[in-house]
Amino acid sequence: QVQLVESGGGLVQAGGSLRLSCVASGGTFSSYVMGWFRQAPGKEREFVVRIGRFGIAKDYVDSVKGRFTISRDNAKNAVYLQMNSLKPEDTAVYYCAAKTGTWDYWGQGTQVTVSS
Image (cartoon, rainbow, N blue to C red):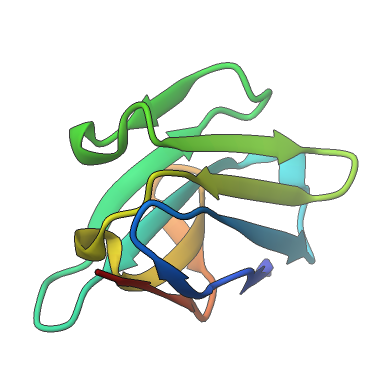
């Protein structure tokens, strides 16, 4: 069983930056594709970005391309999301997830609030 714990959320002004972290335990981290999702109030959870097992393949939703960067450190069992040029519409709870065939494991989420 894999446990995922996110951190790094907070309140930031539009145009600012945040870096989210997600640390995994209880599994073989390098065997998982990792991803970030978000859920804004009143909306469904949406995919943001994923990163392949070796940190090479990356896939971003169009709305964050050029602003967000995902990375991972398999030695630290961690995945990161650097978020720059934040916009109010980025406000959401951000979730880290791990995937084998499907998105099997989820963190508890971290709140990101971007003020205008």
